[in-house]
Length: 476
Image 1: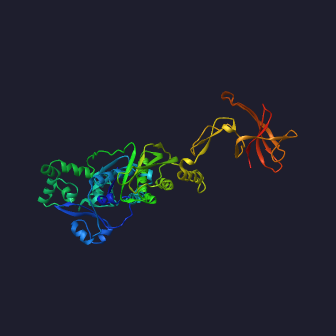
Image 2: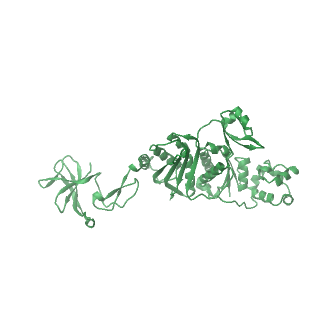
Image 3: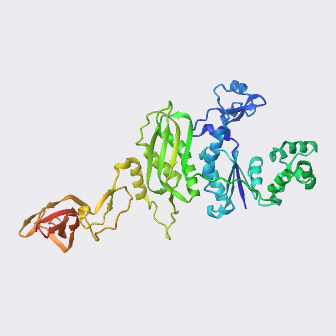
């Protein structure tokens, strides 16, 4: 097995900066040894002299406009849940710890094209989600977690390869047990490597079986059972905005983060969706604004969904500024990746489908299509439908007119020939229909393709019961 550990060192601050591109000085503070001190700060604050461990009054003296938030453990837990939803696409064996994700990637390497491709994809998407990450790969989950925190970038695939990495890592980084820490100080040991050189029976006698068992899990000499994380059956995520937004175009930035999370959740289930529901919270307890984003086909590509979201925004009127953006998906459909043909299709081969999707996003229910109906009467052989919907098998075969008149139009007859802008020439034999007796609208007609002296083509028929001629469609 091969484990990937993702550690998020700046998570306490990142949870307050989601959904914004603001780069002004910002920091999170917490109580340390009875004093309010800076826990994390962004690059702008560090450039102004603020650093972790600095008392809050001193930080404000350096940067009076420093934005400060108290650490929020609840927000951090929710952020880790969101990251787990996104990471579900990479492995079904996923474990979550505070500020850390662990997942087994050995079984996924072939799917993603190797470890370099997998890590490249992860590192490309995480900044878009608003997180800085440290990663490590190891043959055990405990080792991957430790190395991600202490030796980011490490890759080890065996016990022998792991040992050199452990030589200088303080023992306190592996175990928070006060008895273990006290023992290490008492006997003059410092690192995990020092402890590993001690006789195991003597170590167990002094501190009990817990530490030796932990070391065995670290090295891969013992199983490492952990409670597995499982995704929820439905997707519902909220993104609290650090500042209220009154520009609908500014919603694209937080929407992209929600869509990346959604698509990770969908890919992990081998699914896609056609129905997204967006929810916008406003200040002062105003009612939520909600709108649906319906697609013509199941999708799970974040950039495609973001483009359709942007088009849907054109029809949105904000009644008030937005302080939180939510995304809900309850309907999932099985999804099969579209593969290329044996011979490459021309560029833009699906341009028509994307163009139709864009129209649907912009116009919404005002855009309709036509679906065939199993009826030989041309005026009843189609119905209005959602674009892209398939209907019954068409009853007519062969060449049909581009335009169908709302109602058949009677034609004049001169010298025994139907007339429309001149005498009509009948091209070919008739096509006869007799149908509709069961619904009270029975017809008996002979249809012809006809042409006038101006070389215009028409679709006409002769009523076999009444004997009259009628124009029903235009070809040109």
